[in-house]
Image (cartoon, rainbow, N blue to C red; front, side, top):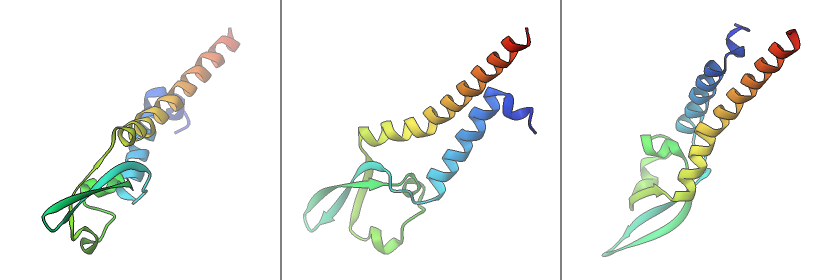
Length: 108
């Protein structure tokens, strides 16, 4: 198992799957978004931190969505989600890649 953790592609995939699981299975309200409420004849937009688990129907009770017409991430929320989901695994894989190159150069 130790040899797998020295492969950058394995590290990238491992952390990608791990972070996707965390953000889509647990209600971590971290990403900026808006909730659109239907109030009578009009709608009201409220800025709110959303969880990615809301988009697959997890992390909230049906009673909480009673008057909610729609909810979505703002551009800043998309940027943060992309940074966490793709950026952190990329940095970890790059770190392993640099460590492997450093180890090879010491052996010469």
